[in-house]
Image (cartoon, rainbow, N blue to C red; front, side, top):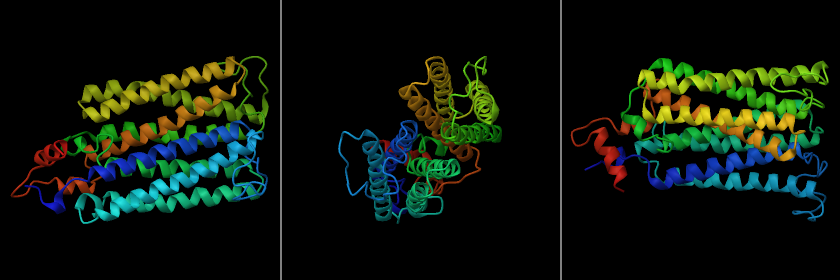
Length: 336
């Protein structure tokens, strides 16, 4: 029998982590829609209400978009609070309350929620400058990374299967490179969308081409593109390298998913530039960029666990004892 203190995280904790992560993704993606639609200052300097309304008239779409983004932030807070409460109820389990457990990352996620939320108010009161948008995006990306880590610690995204797998330190380096590039591309993407003229500075694809605006805005756009190209090329190499080295299956799947997202991102970028920068495609481009960041971070965390660089509490729970082995623990979860 499995000891209560050595049980893997309960399914309820895993589900709560998944829900919080999905809402966080929707929130940051909707934030890109706010920026692309020009609704960032739709409510002026009014916060938290919008010109006295908790929900403005439907004929003012810019106000509706801005307020919906704020309400998504509230929904995100509620989902993280549920995750914290669910983890707290199971904190006696080593896999939840131990060092490297879900309980720690859940509390960190709750603390990180306040940072972008409060900075959102700063953004409004300072007139929505470019630097504030970048900081806000970085904080939001950090929150998503913490929630992804919480999900893996809870057993999601292959977090249970990776406990009995073994990987190489070289895979950690490759995945980390993808994560760093992905974060830089996301931040530069937000800056490109914010600086006047930068989003449409290049008239051609894959290079700028004739008719481009030139100047500093074009340099920002080009820097964003070059890093994006490097990221896609790097993602394209990882599945083949990981398969050759015999990396764990969950890591290989994450690499293939990252490559698929990278290819899709190229399609969105080409369509966006050659199609006259339609708002829908720009939103899809931003959303795919965030998904690449989450995938690259998840892949990095999984490779670190497999290589012994990051030891999560569930691994300690799964260590063989007089009555149980790691395989027995995983089998126990599978038959719940």
